[in-house]
Image (cartoon, rainbow, N blue to C red; front, side, top):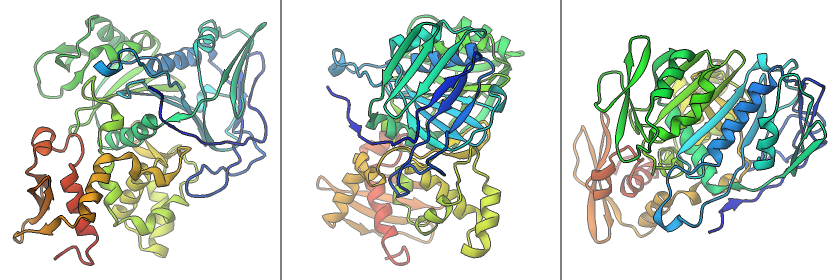
Length: 469
């Protein structure tokens, strides 16, 4: 089976380079037209970043850990036992004072990110931009031998990545970005935006806990992480302040990194059951976000679908987008101050617009900062709805005129959606949201996003002048 991908082209003013005896990174600037479906940078004649990496051995270990996630597949459907996807294409974003590397596992059930903070480099970011690079076995072998005192040269160009270590040179080619990754990046930010921090322990306690985890696969049962004195322990029973985890083997990558970490923070999303794990170092962070179950990839969650049919923010999305400015942290208060008077945008409208931009792949969510960050994905925005089969099915139902209002009351609104010859009742209540009588909703509820009947009803109401029959 071939990997479905969306081709895209970057043009660079110059190649990126890694200079100095102490490891200095230079990323190339992309020169893309400033249109809705492309990535635009401030200038085409400036490098993203040029400076010395102060802890090359640690950064090399983090990059290897990131790629170990890319090369892992924690769930293999029976039909794919002999057709493992080989996509390995981390995204690199330069924005203000930090560099970000993002990647997914092959099954799209694990998202990993490295944040290189200002203390990890000795030079500022010169320009902003986003590109994707490819790491394979020779590259990982080169990174595995990096020492703090070594000479290492890294070159990032429009179509390749090269590492020169002593007398050895490794070159990797650029590959297209898989569609599953694009869908996953859109969905994972929707999950993260709802997460809350549940546990926080020192790196030493984190290392002890991670070492105590079972070595066999646990994907057939759920486990819970609960506090135990100053540390953490594993429990088979749900309890107060517990974090549910399906497939503990997905946390293995954190074990060898935790020994050098200062802090481990664990976040949980009560809606889906997804969790996020952050290892904090003195000058960088390593993030791991795992889906509720091993067999559930973020690319199929559907948490971002509702924002695609919500037209309330449509008029102000482009206005807010112009103010993002490649911010490593989007300052909502500053944007609100600039736009409130001129465009009558309140706080709720601004947050709704940012959520809508997230569904378009134009922003990600940083749990550590509790804020969005500007990171345009290199893909066409008119492909958004085409990647959502539930949304396509909902629009088909609408095109066939199979949606109508039912008899409701002052507290709730009833919409009847006919599908496969059956009228499904969709109920909207201001307190608990939307419910449907279909079997899909009975099985998943809201944990996998709305069903096609709820989506059809939402679009039907949105398209009415006042939202009422």
